[in-house]
Image 1 (cartoon, rainbow, N blue to C red):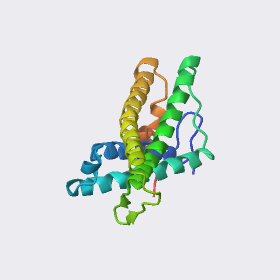
Image 2 (cartoon, rainbow, N blue to C red):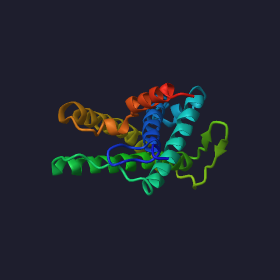
Image 3 (cartoon, rainbow, N blue to C red):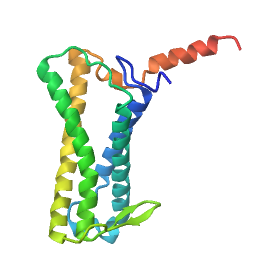
Image 4 (tube, rainbow, N blue to C red):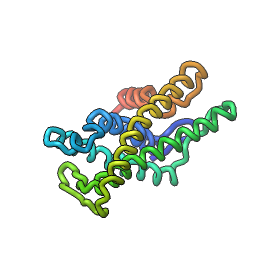
Length: 197
C-alpha cells in the first residue's frame, strides 16, 4: 500500500498513473480531433476519429474526477524551497490545467447537444442530445472547445518546460517525484533474486 500513496518527497503509483495516463489521452484526443467545422466533424469520413476523440475526452473527464477524489486522501509531496512567485505560478498552473481538463469535455458535450448531435462512445453507442437544440449557441460552445483544446496543449507544454527547468537548472526533485523510481524497483528485484528460496 505504501507505494500506492504519495510520500513527503514522491508521488505514489496511483497519482503517477493518473498523471501519465492523462498526458497520453490528451495527446491522443488532440491528434485525432477531426477539426472545428461542424460539417467536417460530423462527416462520414471523420466518423471513426470523432468517436475516438469523444471517447477519449470522456475517459479524460472520468480520470480527472478520479484524480480529484484521490487527492482528498493522498496529499501531494512537499514542494522544494523556491521563490514565492514560483510557488504561486505552479499552483496557478495546476489549477488552470484542472479547469481546462474539466471544461474541455463539458464544452464538447454541450456544443454537440446544442447543435443537435449525440455524443458517441466506442462500444457504448449514442447518448443524447439531452439539451434543447440552439444551433448557433452550440456552434459558439464548440468553437470555445476548439480554442480550449489549443490552449491546453500550450499549457501542458509550458508545464513540461517548467518541470525540465526544475530538473536541469534548479536541480530539485519536482520532475523526479512524478517519475517511476526504476532504481528502487530494480534494487528490490535484485535483492529478491539474491535471497535464498
